[in-house]
Image (cartoon, rainbow, N blue to C red; front, side, top):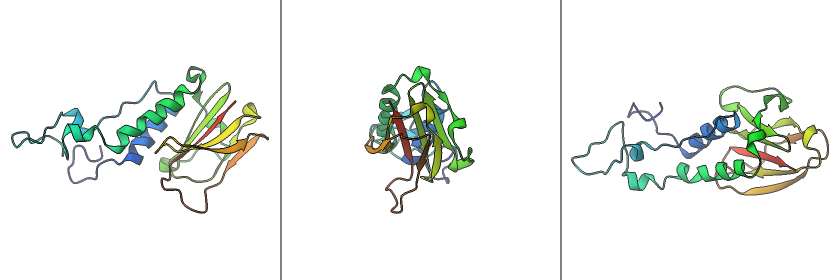
Length: 176
């Protein structure tokens, strides 16, 4: 695991945490557990407490790491729909599924479609089952929705912005 068992490796960043959370939940996982190395050990930073696996701060400081605070946005998004009707929906990707970091996680139910893209690349979705639904660009980093418009045809094309976003990962939220 990156940064956990080998102190020479970098630690996971907030975007890494979000990526694994959204990929897991949109694949149909019952949830996602966020764990911070220092917090899991209740590392105190006391001279007698060496910690294990490269703990870098006290557990009290770890409570405020960026990645932990962002998990609430995923929870709020999932609770905004009847997620129990949802399932992983790669078949809605009209360009096909990509590999590794370019993977686009798609989760849909009877009246919603969520698509998470870690790299912020352009992609196309079949939105025929959600015609006339509202479409938002959702920031997993801060939970802000930006209204895009209505699903007024059978295909939605997300175009990577010409001006880079502060965080590359985005989610498309389509809801009736």
